[in-house]
Image 1: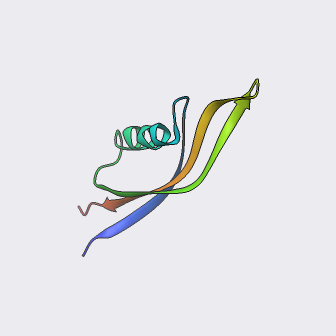
Image 2: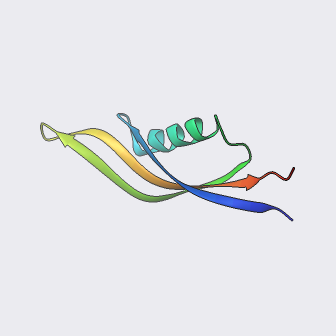
Length: 68
């Protein structure tokens, strides 16, 4: 039986929402193994001078808790 844990992670990018999600996975994988899924809960953009300056995502990352 596996045990899963879910953590809420915020990510951002100046390129796109997809890139923001990739940044979340890249950063989380530095300290967590066995990521199973990423649920994008919310998306928003920051605007400067009437243009999108940053894409932001609020995600829930699910990963397996390893047994000792």
